[in-house]
Length: 34
Image (cartoon, one colour):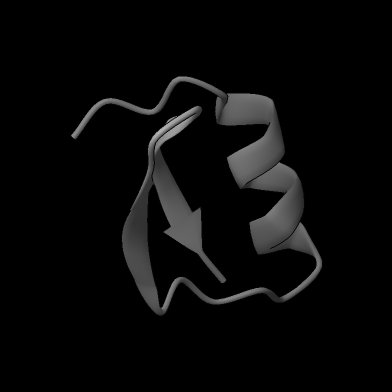
């Protein structure tokens, strides 16, 4: 899987968010759900 926005993913992790899934958005493409 390609992470298009590594800084955002790192910030979410630093604040304790946990990835629980993903979904497809017709406008934005793949979205990671925290």
